[in-house]
Image (cartoon, rainbow, N blue to C red; front, top):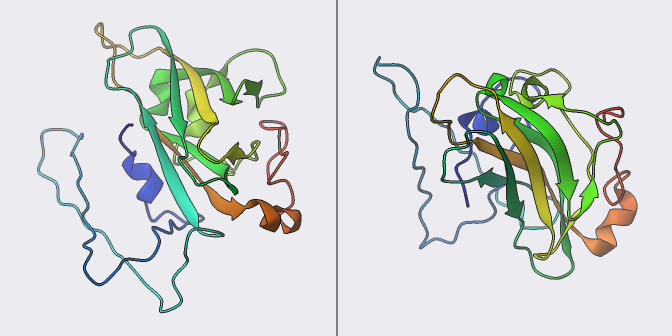
Length: 195
């Protein structure tokens, strides 16, 4: 489906914590990472915390990786699908682009419905990890039948283009639980309304 930008898992203040669900005693947590920085050496440090209660699927935070394996030289649609069981929704609260200055976002769609209120392009920096107040409210992604799509244009300097790496952070909700979640089912208003 795609890689997850490291920014989604950063420890910056205000970052949404990701709930990966409950691990059984016979399961392992494996983190696979690729260093994409300069020629200097790097080390990967991460922390995992747990609770006896466990978050479970509903109500917990999760992430959807987005991306395509091909290099984008001009424009492309980058999509992902939640893959949830019927009766569950994924409600996106943040979209993060790696190297956002290299991208222009033409549109954000849930299914066929545009999630932006203005006509025109959005600078990729709006979706950068360091953007203050980058939380968004989008329509819910229903079960496993609706796509979240970013329509992007590459504006970087590499003549052969680049792979896009991005992802969405959000909450997994049961349909019956949404009555108590303001803006979770019909939040189409970003970028003019921030939650």
